[in-house]
Length: 85
Image (cartoon, rainbow, N blue to C red):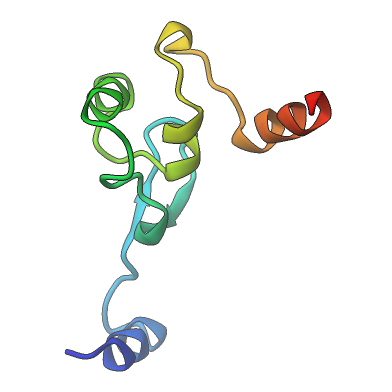
């Protein structure tokens, strides 16, 4: 099936859109935003151990093992980082 046909089927409700619920922030987001294999194996293992396999890219990027269990809003973290620069 080509991409156009898949988008049409999703738009018409014939199939469910490929989404997941992030294990960290609990946002329902598109699989394009999944952390995937963008990080080192060690970082990926730590994120999966803390939040499970479905984690968005923003949460995985902001993850610090020392702060496990403490939710950090990715937008707020970015704003704080921008203020410090």
